[in-house]
Image (cartoon, rainbow, N blue to C red; front, side, top):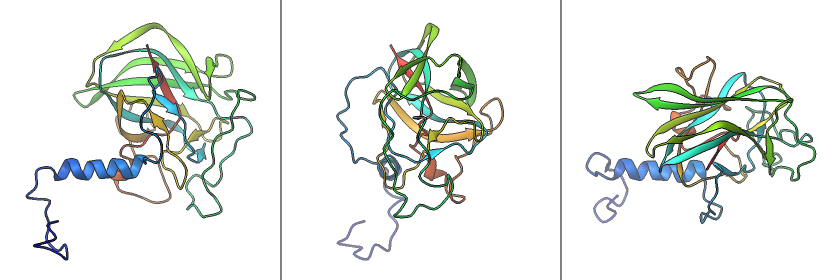
Length: 243
C-alpha cells in the first residue's frame, strides 16, 4: 500500500502491480516453511537435511509425499524414507487442534532402536505435460531396510539416474493406517520445520489413494483448508539422495 495516499489501506493494489504475485507467493513460502533456523545450509547429497519437530502421524492409507522442482542438473543415487525411533509417539492426534500443552517435540537421537515395521514403496514421478510418469520405484521394509544414516534409511538404485534442472517431480511413499511407521506431519504447531536441500524447491505436500498421482489432494488436517495451506510444505517420510 501507498500509505501517503491510502493510509487506511482501503484500496487494492493487486491489479496494478506486476510484482504482486511473486510477492504474495514469497510471503506464503516464509509463513509455511518458517525461517527460524540457519539458512546457510551445508553442501549435502541428501534432499532432506533435517527432519524437524513436526508432530508424528500414521493415520493415512495410500501415498503421502510432495511435489518439488529440481533447480539444477543432478543424479539420483538412492531413494529412502525417514525412520522414526521405536519409542517415539505422536504428541497429539493427527487431526486434532493443538494446545499449549501439546508442543511439537524434537525426534529422539541415536541409531538404537530404529526399524522399519512394514513394507513401503518409494516412488519418484516425473511430471511432463501435467501427467506424472514413474521414473524410479524401490521397496523398503523389515527385510530390506537399507542403509541407516542419522534418522533416514536409503536404498541404493541399481543404476544412478540423471535428471535435468527445471524438471518437476513427485516423491511419494506408500503408507497404511497403523502400520507402525510414522511420518512427520507437513504442518507444524510451534516446532522447527525440516531443512531441505537448496538444490530443490518444494512446491506442495500431497496425498493420493490410487496407484498413480492423478487425483492428488492436500494432506488432511484439522479442517478443510485452502490449497495455499499445503504450498511449500512437505511431510518428512520419503526422501532421496543425490550423487
